[in-house]
Image (cartoon, rainbow, N blue to C red):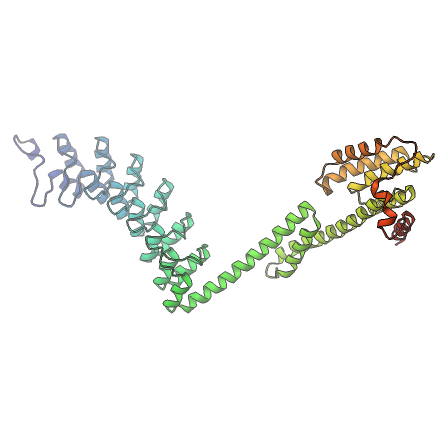
Length: 434
């Protein structure tokens, strides 16, 4: 053979700059490649188009020759003058096995040539879906941009490669990524008049309110192109999204209101739910109906609690044992164990004892009531019971005179209210009868 002859230049070039090794690689002649390599053929020499041995083997999909060259030390990330790597060539041609070999040897999945094209962009431009998926799974940047600022998804949209568009969206490509002019995948779909791609972008969640760098909106772009079907589609989608947002907001507001059990937010949330149409989703409608029903029960209870609290405060200010007893009975019957019940009970017992009588509530009953208050207070109030108990007890125990001293508010009660303590008691009794 020629390689065995003396003085033969194993790296001699033909008329287009190819060596014997490059010709053997291109033709897939594995044995010849082995012999030439043994004869010290230079694997890094490139032809006039910039292809050296490993890049040529990858472009042609000759995996056995690629393995041979890589094992012998060829650079898996070898670059041509314009920055192309073996992986770019294999991805562009769609050679899945060649891609696997290169990945096994550590090929850079995000290498860029002079146009900033990556292996993923090469595969995208050719619609090689299987390689697109493999590169993404290998860690390729799905948002890598070329020299014009286009991501793989935008390139696929511009070229109308529908299968690849679906693949990229499935793997989470950003539909709102912009190129150097502010265009998105949606705006390019509109420019191309591709209704199916517009639908795909809208269903994927593309921003319909996006503006290009020159201020052009998506809607005005569709109008300028006379694409009224797209305009109708966008209008319908916006209406659906608005309804969806209103539904979510209404449910969230009611859920939060019920969680905190505050009257005004719960009432407002119920009113919001009443204004939203849930009829299109029977399961959601049923769920909201249950929430609203529960909310109205909570509203009724909170209003009753406010009424009882107001009565207890008035009875405490009246500083009258009988009035306090009526108010306490009303609170217990209404099952409203609010913050003022404990204060009212302590003051009632103190007034009774000071008058020479005994508490009308046995100690065991009182401790039971205290226990219920402490337990239910966790659910119906975020305020600390302990701090209020300490403050109330301290206030009452500081009164050391033989005769009960009315608080300042009680001393002026008859002057500042329309009725006497007896009147308050009468009102409370009337409420109990009702």
